Length: 137
Image (tube, helix red, strand yellow):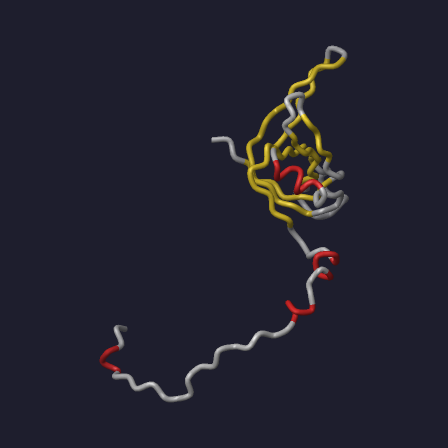
């Protein structure tokens, strides 16, 4: 089974690309760190790719610096240049989750109506008669 889970920050904005057959996908790069200190081990960069309609919808939210978590399948892309073979890891994303705080834009988009308190159904104030023998525990 080929399943990976990565969490990190986006190293660049997502880009929408179309294949010659018209299928759309978005690509970006995820920076992974083993520890939170910048002077620690260097970051590992992994390309991520999202296919289909959700790629188009998510691309505008996948901006540099955003913290995300992805679950997907690992692919190794081999390219050759000047007699040197390069291997680039890439994750085909099945699931993506945004981490961290909400955007200010999404918070300000709330309407005043949604902020109003809704009435809560009151509980009965009458005492409830119960036999202790009926309690199953």
